[in-house]
Length: 417
Image (cartoon, rainbow, N blue to C red):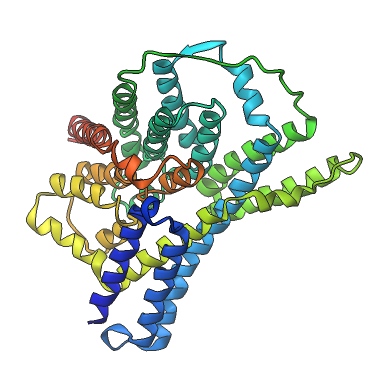
C-alpha cells in the first residue's frame, strides 16, 4: 500500500515536470515538494518493518549523494558566473571565431568542443561552458534548442570512456568489469554518434552566422588569473582523483576557496563595489533545488524496490539487448543507482557486454532532458528548452544513441575476442 502511494506520488512529480509550461509551476518547487513528502511517508509508515533508524540511514546516504552534487555544482557555477559577468567567455569567443561561419559548421564545432571538453573536465563544467558559448551568439529559439540538444548529448558522450568522466564508468571500472584500455575503445563510437547527431540536427540549416563586430573589452589580469585557477582546478580534480583518490568535490572546493583568496588580494587596490564572494548569489538556485528534489525522488524509488525490478530485464532478454534498453531507462531513472543495482545483482556478462552497458548508461540519459545533469542544467539556463521542446528531438537522439551503441558492440567484437 505504502509503496503504491509513493510510486503514485513519484509519477505525479514527473508528470508535473513535463507539463511545467502548462501549469506554470516551477519544476524545482514540485520535485522538492514530492521528494520530501515521499520520505516523510517512509518515516511514518516504514516498509518491511524497518525501524526509523534504518530509514534514517538510507536517507543519510541519499542526502550525502545530494550534498556532494549540490556543492560541486555550486563551486563550478560560481566560477562560470564570475567569468560570464565579466564578459570573459564572450571575449574569448569573439577573438577565436572567424567573422562568419555557416550554421552547419557551427553545429559540428560546438559538438566537437562539448565532446572534447567534457573528456578533460566534468560534465557539469563542460555543459556550463558550452552553453555560455552558444548563448553568447544570440541565436533564435528554434536553433538554440538544437545546439543545446547537441551539447547535452556530446557532453554525456565525451566522458563515457574515462573513469573521471562519468560516475557510472568509474563504478563499472572499480567493480573490475572493464579496464582502462577497454574503456578507450568507446572513444570512436561515442565520437561517431555525436557527429551523426550534429549532421541530422544541421539538416536544413543553410544560413550563415555573422559574428557581430563588437569592441573587444580588455581582459583584466584578475579575470585571466581566475580563469587559470578554474582550468587548473579542473586538471587537478582529474589528476588527484586518479593518482590519490581524492574526491573531486574536495579539490573543486579548494579551487573555489583559492579563487576567493586570490581575487580578494588582486581586487584590494581597486575601486570595486562587488566582492568576489558575492558571485555565489548569481547561481541559479532553482537548478540546485531541482537537483535536490529529483534525487530525493530517485532515492525513494530505490527504497520501494523499483530500481531492482529493472534487473529482471536480463532474465527476458540477452545482455546485448537488455543493455540497450537499460540505457534508455536511465533517461527516466538516475543511472547511478541503476548501475549499482545491476552490479549488486551479479549478472553474468563478458567484457564486450559490460562495455556496451557502460556506453548505454553514460549516454542513454541524453534521451530525456531530465535524464542527466547536463540536461537539467541546460533546461535551467535556456528558458526555451523545456521537456516538450527537447522531446521533439527524441528521434534524432535515438538514432544517434543506437548508432553509438551498435558501434560500441562492434568495436568490442573486433578487439575483445
